[in-house]
Length: 191
Image (cartoon, rainbow, N blue to C red; front, side, top):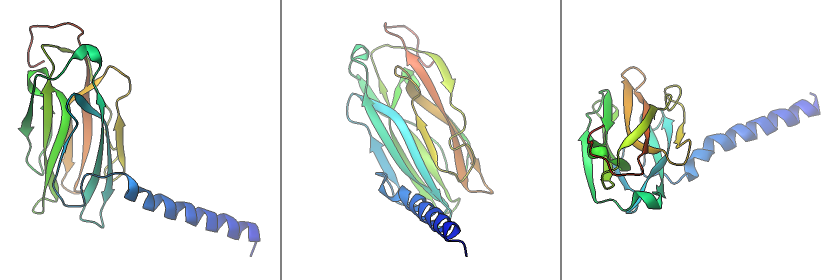
């Protein structure tokens, strides 16, 4: 057998083995099929979401979140609350009420549907209003893949998400709702 091919094959196998173990050191907030409650520190909002799917570990995902302080001009949050909740196995669209920004997530796993219920922790910043809102593409791009969403540009904030559930594949895809916030107080609510 060609020694170069043996070397190439063994380095590829080592690379694949290292990639499959990569997901263990990501600072996950949950174990498979476990509930979690994640909140950013006061004055910070969610800026990144990462998840890793495993069929072998119960058709569930591990989750990791990152927070960042809001710009000084936005001020301090004057109120925070847990917003709408979805039921496992259902499609879900949720945007923080009262023009809030997402500052946390909680989730509970339900064995009966092999899915989770979700709820966002939202914070209100004075009377600022969202504008230039958009939805991300699907995260993950395909069911059962690793998913990652990082705010694409400073000045955008997560206001909510739309999520679809595949009853066949027992997994979710997400489209995050991202918006800018005005630099001035405005009179509109629930945009």
